[in-house]
Every structure is written in structure tokens, then in C-alpha cells.
Image: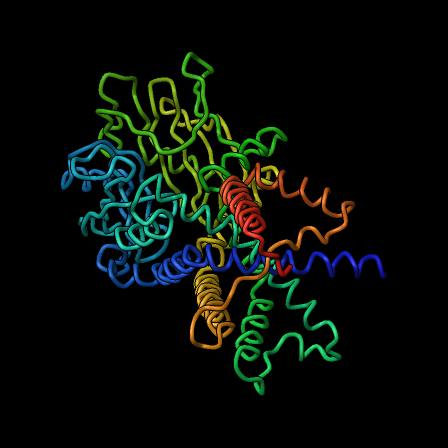
Length: 465
């Protein structure tokens, strides 16, 4: 309609100005995220090569009982406490015995002792992090991508990048489609103009490539925000409010004073999970072999992780830990005194948002579809790097290859009709509240822009917008 066209004609300079400034100012953060993300996408396969001795062994005739494997690990590494055990998930894979409280190991990490399941020989020990069992190489790259090894403060860079990525991507798509709307063929919209030259050629590659990867960039932005510091907390609060949090198996035995739910790896001082089945100072324990057998009876096939009781009166928790498709996330609680299953939690019974969150995170981190997933992430990261390079090149070419071009003129918002501007302002305010690293920089930019405009007017200059 004519009204819609006039509104877009007024909005387009505003979108162009936002896309330009967001691209110029946020692109360095996006570039770091893309480069480190590219490294992370390749870290899964690199990990298999670097740590092949610890991860793989010749396939034997028969696996030893899990209790004997743990006993071998404890003989070689008596330090710390057993926080979890991951039995060999497939033929030729080692068993991991995870130790917490080990001197020299990051408190948030564990020491993984790798045991040959066929011979009981210890193949080595490496620091491990996270539910995906990242070893030192992948852990280093993961932390580099997440916070540049700067801790909690460093996480702000990645949240800033994720908060603005979707805005820049959407704005770019809208601008490209509006620019190409008169083209009569789909080919002219989705492919660059190879015959073009100069800035027009750069723009065509930038726009066409951005269109191809837009959905992927939106996905990376949304999933990255789900476990960011501030936006992630808002997402978690929203999920809690609507009853969509991730459920946990109850680790309570008999509903006593230690009632609670399993929320991660536990450990117990003095616990001998691989020997006699006795816990020092506590009642009899059926032992790991019985616990694993009880979990198998509830259809918890490999890969699984066994977590010891966190305290007296709580249960063993056995959980499936397969992040690849199809996800295996079932878990059971088992009474250490009787070996009976006291609670079962099936992934099929998770709320919808809990499932979507799990799938989204695993797709973002390259786990869900294995090497295909990792190749797709690498391609997205490479394309984002190219988009940033092309974007800066367009800015340079706008200055006729002698200096960076002048910025987009200010004042475009004054042309937008009030009936469109007010709802837009409300939407932006709400989004900015839930995504503070989008809202705060945007408010700061608007404040500086208004101040510069006021100064320019006081000097008697006129805006070209």
C-alpha cells in the first residue's frame, strides 16, 4: 500500500544508520567471536587426534566390571574424591573416572583418569570440563570463545556480540531485499553481481552472502544468549515463570531431611566406589556394578555417567549424557543401600522449552549432529568473517579508497510517522530491557547522537538528513 511504502521510505534511512553504526562498532566483537567460534568448531576433531592415547584402546574380548576399573584408577590416582564415573561408551573407548578436589586442578574442572576397560590399565589423566567432557585443548578454546580467558568480565564481550548479531543480520536482510525488490529473477536476489565493480560489487557479495546465512546467524545469536550472563538470567527467569525449566531426578532416599534434586556431579569423602562397596562411616553400599546394572534395567544404555550420593540419605544418580542426535538424557536415582531405583526422569517428559534449549545449545556447540554440525558452524563462522571484511571494505570504498567514508546522516527518525515511531520505541525498550547489552549501548548511542546533533545546531550547521 501507499501508506506502507511511505512508512518504509521513512524507516529505511533509520535502519541503514543503525546497521551501519552497529556494524562499525560491534563488528570487532563479532570478528573475535567468529574467529574463536571457528577454532571451536574444529576442536572436537583435533581433540580426538591430540588425546588419542587416552581416548582409545585396542578392543579386547571382555570388559572388566566397572568397580575393578575404578579401583585401578584410584590406585594410580588416590588424590581427591570420586565425583563421577563414565563407563566406556563404545568398543575401544576408555572409561573415565572423574576426580574433584585435586590439587592443581581448577575447582570448576575435574581430573579425568582414563582406564582401559579390558585390562584395567590407566592410560593417563587429563583435566576435564563441562557436561560434554571437554579436555584441555577444547576447554582452552571454549573459554577463549566465551570470555577471552578474562573470567566473568570477559563474558560481556560475547554477550554484546550475541545481543547485536541478530539486529545487524535482520537489518541487513531487510536493506538488501528492499534494494533488490525490483529484480525480476530470484537469481538476481540471492547471487552477487559478478559484473559489478567497486563498492557496488562489494555490496552485492556482502548482501547476497548475508542473505544466505541470515537464519544461521539468528540462530547463533538466540542460542548464545540463552546462557549469557544477563540475557541468559532473564531467559531462565521467564522459563521458571511459565513452568518450562529443565526437570531433575530426585536424589532423595526415603524423603528424609536431605530431600533435594540432583543438579550436577556430587562427591563423597571416603567413598570407595570401586572396592568393597562400603562408604566409610556410612551404611552398606551395593557398589557400582549393581548400580549400573539397575540403570541398564531401566533402559539407560550408553553413554552414561554415574554420580555418587552427594550426602548421607541421598541416592546414586545415573544419567545418559549423549548430546548427539538422538539425544539421550534419561536419568534414574538408585538407593545405595538396596540397589532399587527410586526415581526416573525421561527426556521425553521434559517441557517443550527445556527440550528446545537443550537442542539449541547442543546445535550451537557442534554436538547435536556431530561432524556435519561442526562443518556447518565452521562455514557460518567463515562467512561471518567475510561479511565483516566486506562491510569495512564498503565503508572504505565510500570514501573513494582514500579514507573511510562519511557516516550515514542523522535525523532520519524525524521522518517516521508518530503512529509507527511510538510502537517501535516501545518494542525497542522492551527488547533492550531483556537484552541489556543491546539496550544500554543503543541508549548511549542515541544520547551521544542527540548531543552531537544539538551541538551542531548550536553552531549554526544544518543536518543533511
